[in-house]
Image (cartoon, rainbow, N blue to C red; front, top):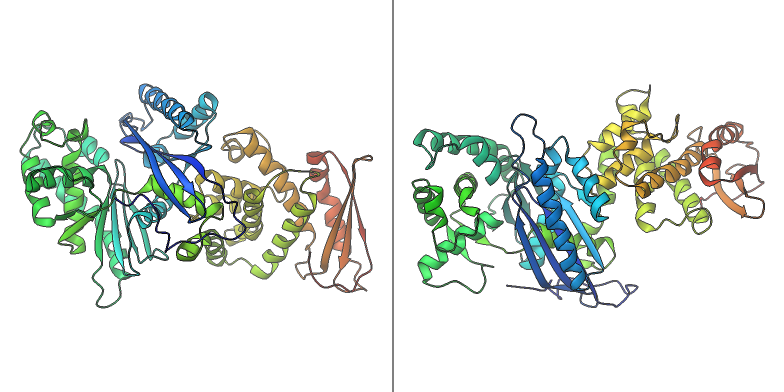
Length: 550
């Protein structure tokens, strides 16, 4: 198995600090909780896996009537997370990045569970969408296999969802996520042991029907004559590959990375598994603990997907979401360029795509964004100490703050929150999307309040403070282009701590323009800024011939 990202494929920016780091990635899946701990070598850049851990918790085993996560399962998950933290600490991990997927996404008390993790462990878990999960799976697979710029399909069968991806070493062409998984289908469709013929036939038909839309999306993005290889990743696929290799080869391979499982062999396994009880399946050599309960449903998903995709074999890859979380972290911290540089700009492209979708006036929004970033930069280190990540969230909120006009002018700030929150921005976690949506929502009218549901969705005090301060900055930026004609060329911010006063010098684009509406709007909106930062803001118009925003 390749333990390193290909050094030939990836290169590091010259400004990157050349220091090894150890970080841990945790995946709160529907079936199991997984952790991988890696050592990052930024000079290559690459990472090597130094430890793995796993615990089968079954977050997907939710209350049938309410769909909520069970209290005993929550306790078990938190205990596992606490143990993971201790292991990571023992191995000197500097950072823990954790993500949650479909079970937590869909549970009515999912966010309460994440709050509980913060309260008890001090660890923030990012809730990611199905499409974002697929993107990170793609990054994880790319870190462990060479695609040689050829199209590949990837299938990841989880406990609650199945992701199918089409990519070719660069931008993923198609990212799909379907609400079928090994745990979900087992709990919803199988209640006999062994499964009855009627239930088995329904399981096959239901699975096929659910997968059809994803497969159609994949096929629609294939070019004439392309026959992409199918890559499979997940516990289900690894288990079947391991059992098959053990039986065919007579021994356990040192690695499953690159092992090929034929559709014929898979169909044989499905026919065998369907006739066995859970106890009998558990006795098959190579069957992991508790996997026997859900292996049949997972195998059927793989069988139906391969049939619909026209794939005669699937090649296993031992890297997936957890490793993708590592690669995404490296991208976010400027450690990767070249081969994955397109991925590093996924955030910006996704924001612009949503802006176009909701017919945002980009010329206007871009000016507001430049004013917001200028204010952010000029007040950094004096009024606030936010960094590059918060700066990027402010930019996204500024670009999209007016997208609510697509729904209605009335209360458009609230519509902006809804559109951003549910627009499927790629490259961001659910928490980051929540922050962006809240910053945009509070660019006008009432400042953030605890009674507002959107503000309560933020998990920590730090996240709420991020929204409160950055939305106050955005309010000023919006005021600076009140007529939406680019009347103000640039601004200069001066801070006098001894007087708790800030001067905002306004330089108009045209010397004869007194910018009365902009000055009035600034005076009207500055109250929230003054209260948030504990200063008095004085705005003055300056004579100028300068025509650029700094």
